[in-house]
Structure formats: C-alpha cells, structure tokens
Amino acid sequence: MSLFLHSHPLASFCHKVLVALYENATPFEPVHVDLGNEASRAAFLSVSPLGKMPVLRDEARDRTIPETTIIIEYLDRYYPGADALIPNDFDKALEVRLWDRCFDLHVQEPMQQIVAERLRAGGDPARVVQAEAALRKAYDLIEQQLGDHPWIAGDSFTMADCAAAPALFYSETLVPFVNQPRLHGYYSRLLARPSFARVLEEARPYFKFYPYRERLPARFRPDEAAE
Image 1 (cartoon, rainbow, N blue to C red):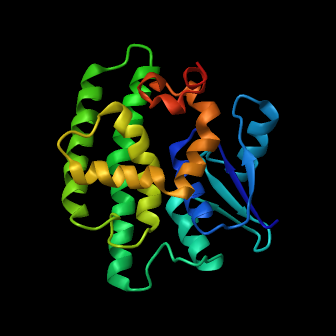
Image 2 (cartoon, helix red, strand yellow; image 1 turned 90 degrees about the horizontal axis):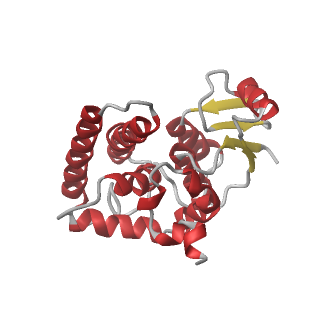
C-alpha cells in the first residue's frame, strides 16, 4: 500500500478527503489519529509537525501532503480515477476551486467557530451570532449558485462537492436551511452519494462526541437509533 491517510473519523476536513478517495475507489490505508494517546500523537506529529489533520503520506513517491485541497489536487494528478474531481477546462477548474474555498472558508470556518464557542469555558454569544449570520449568508450564495444543476459547479461531482458534503452536514445542525429549496435538494443528494454515505457510516460510532450531537438526525446517534 502506497498511500496512508492520517485522520480522525469525526473531523469534517478529514471527511472531505475521504469523500474524494472513496469517489474514485483509490486504494489507501487509513491511520487513525488519537491525540489523547501519547504514542499516536507523537507518530502523527512526526508526519504533521503543525498537528493539522488530515495528512496524506505517499510512500511510493516519498511525499507528505498536508491541506485538504492540496491532497485532492495531488490525488487527481497522480492517482486519477474514472471521474476527474478537477475539470481539465481551465475556467471550469477555477470555478471548482473557488467553491471549494467558499465551503472551507465560509461554511466550515463559521461552523467550527460555533462549536468552539460551545466547548470554550465562558463562550462568547456574540461570536456565535456572528458565525450564524455568516452561515446564512453563505447558504444564500449557495442557493443562487446551484440554479438548475445537481452539483455546485455544474453537472459533474467535483472537489467542490467533496468540500460541501461535510461542511453542510455539520453546519445544518447549527443553522438549519430555511427557504432554500435548491440547497436542501443539494444536501439530500450529497447525503445519498455513496462516497459520502460511506464516510458518515464510518463516522457514526464517533458522533456521540460531537458537541451538538442532539441535533443530528436520529440515525447518526447510535445509542438512540438502537432504542
């Protein structure tokens, strides 16, 4: 096995890369990072000195690749699948990269800010309100962008959709979609996508650690689903 992905099943940015890997059935070995375990933490920091997940290690090419977008670009270049996640057409590729950035910066970041404030002692309600407003603004932009297309950058599933799936999965638990039928339909298609469905199934045992787990759909709360 050449590729090793250092990640955690609950982390949304790890989900983004996993969707890309599963989308094209790219062979890889998952390396579960447990930051609470000294040995696991030390091994991870030897690969990722900044401590950021996920990180892809390619033993065949002796390369270590951080950052989700760069990882997917790398996979698309050196381990391409049947369907390119980044179009060959330059203008279309720019649009995919733009929306990939939009989901990372304008959905993931405010979503993570809200979660961080819940975890932080004496969390700042004003920051939560600001982050919620940012998510609503992002939702409106996504609603407008979708138009009549099934995916965010057109008719094909791309890297931008890999970014969208986990970002929207978590953000919807914090700020639900309201009066955004295209976004709601898009989200439903993402949930039904086999690559993302597999990611969520693998993450399901860990959702009990999500700070807003009570807002997840019942099927993603293992203890309640079994009742």
